[in-house]
Amino acid sequence: MNTTRFAIIVALGVTAACAAGSTDNSDDAGQPTADAAPKKDASAPKNDASSSNDAAVANDAASDAQTADEPDAAPPEAIVYGHSPDTLYTFDPNTHAVTMVAAFSGCSQSLLTQVIDLAIDSKMNAYATTFDGIYSVDLSIASCTLIKTGSYPNSLSFVPAGTLDSSVEALVGYFGSSYVRIDPSTGNVTSVGTLTGGYASSGDIVSVAGGGTFLTVTGNGCGDCLLQVDPTTGDMIQNYGQLTHGAVYGLGYWAGSLYGFDSAGDLFSISGGAGDAGLTTTDIALDAGVTWWGAGSTTNAPATAADGGAIATE
Image (cartoon, rainbow, N blue to C red):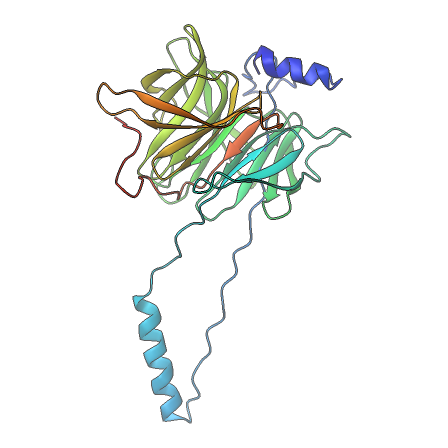
């Protein structure tokens, strides 16, 4: 955790004790971590045709053929989630509306809720980390279920299937410069790689299928810089340079643009990056009255805008 977030914690009157573990490489003063709970998917039962009614059988066969031609899943809803230490919000990337979902419940082993980051997979299953453990999160009501107590990363994201695992998405994060994988069913942490070059996570990582994996960092004069990182190793691919905001503890992605959430309450978009043009940062909400501590978006978010534009990746 960097100095800014530590100052916030002191202002709340909390003393965070960092538990040492085999993978406890937490940066600075132990920035908060959070995980979200899986959202249940519902599927409609399919009615079988009566074997005694030929017309019904024919109708069912036609219905099944039509179903086979339909897409496997509807396009994801245009939504990015952001949160303060104790409250979950939604951000609409089309209208720029910020809406409070609810105060987090069950997301702490103490009286004070301090959710430090959020990760969401392609099916909208969510996980959050706190100073005391990792939780699954019901995004509809901001309710948490404990998976395991312990020390967890201050930056959290899923990476697409085929990255660290050939068949499933992987939950990953950074303890400073140490890149780890977390088993969302058990909370067990496994070391994967290292972010080199003197950089360390300043707050968040986000990854989208076909669109890249991005991380906000400090170090080497950055406060904050935006990196593209390799989700298979955790190391840097390219440095886009200094952002116009510091303490960017939340990152989301939608339709070719990144969305940054900083601890001062600012929410902004990051786009471009093609050729020598560099990135374009556009403020959306300045000092929104929310101390942003994290954000998350589905790995199934659109990788490009309607016109095909996106942040240039290598």
